[in-house]
Length: 347
Image (tube, rainbow, N blue to C red; front, side, top):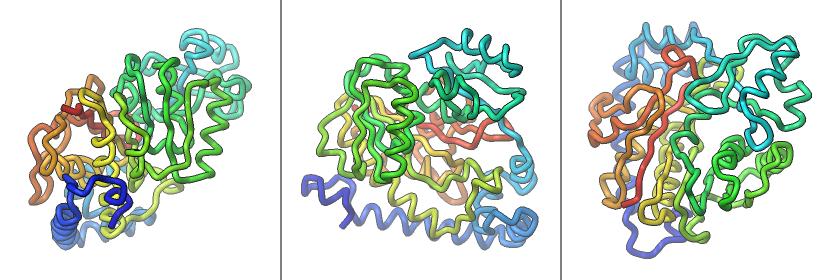
């Protein structure tokens, strides 16, 4: 029995059988994809040695061999986020430009800056140490923009990690309590350091498995930046790990359990952003579609951020049409790390 089910009422909406059946269906489809694209996938894996043939097969199915290789050659924007608790974007930009940096506004956000040139590593500048900005990927910033927690009264970041998005949430709402959870003590220490450096005062950090968050009551603004394959960073050999079909299935199981919990802790009308640093259909639309099939208490929302539409058809799988409201960001199209962002509303 999963941790999720241990802390729920006996009449579970998502049963263990539901979960097992969906994972088995996905396993069968992915095995077919691996066989279908085996030859081309092995060619990709030989050329790009940090990529597993299973990964190559899945992304050839998602794009094509040619487009997948185009993506692997992409160079995303380098971005920083001005800490508007301490300084606005224009003042920070002027201050850094005096030090020789070449910057431009990252227009989808009110605080992002694109670093076009820098004479020094951007994590080694005095302004960084003072907490005037932090380093954050362009797509990563858009997850919190999608959430828009400015009017929320009780906020939770279910898988906060080092707290980069947690501190971004605090820039949108400096008053409401923000609960930040993680099960990695080292990441929680990094989160504590980031809260201190960036002068964030309204965050309560807890060492907790987010599948146990039902113990914390209800929230009206929920960010679930779910643990994932990290395939959005597949363009970086040093940051990417080869992923097998078994690896993906393990993550999908956890993601479904986490999203099920997120829906349980959401009060009526609450907004939930589900996001991953992954472009895979399996970890995103398939996860949400699994919950849509057994729960009738949420719906997909349109998101006012850049990106391609969500995927509603992959191999032999079909999802609810509303999954097209998700946004997908690709290195070779949007100049970002790979990311998928979906916004849900509890009904």
